Length: 137
Ligand code: CMP
Image 1 (cartoon, rainbow, N blue to C red):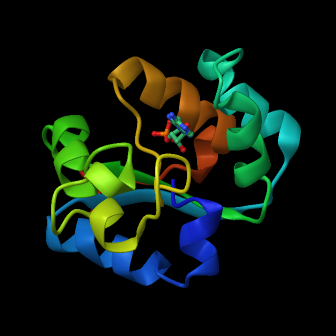
Image 2: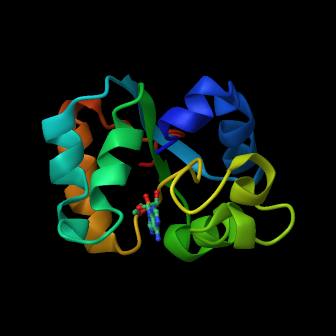
């Protein structure tokens, strides 16, 4: 997910370009309005943590772009592409290093396991919105 800071900074295209250049296949994509109850559900695992309220405020600043990508080893490769959670600590050349700001305003969210991917995709997309590109037979 490209967070509100990435949409506001107009770097959505740069993020998508990076994943396309890495060979990821696009499965689904949409601009998501900042709906508090959906964001609360999305980040329910962090409820009660010190950064939770600030995270909700940030994520409701504006729309996000939700994207589903498919690739071999997608989760570990995505983590390498985006860099550490704290943009200030993200390795040079990673997306968060290039376009993120700090621990909270960190440009993108990526699922950290197949299970969280399944839950997060279900919160953002209806089944019929998921395509396979290129179509796999
Ligand atoms: P994300 O990978 O989407 O997962 C949870 C989000 O909470 C994280 O990116 C940041 O946006 C935010 N976050 C995590 N840790 C902190 C922190 N220590 N301070 C502020 N925000 C944080």
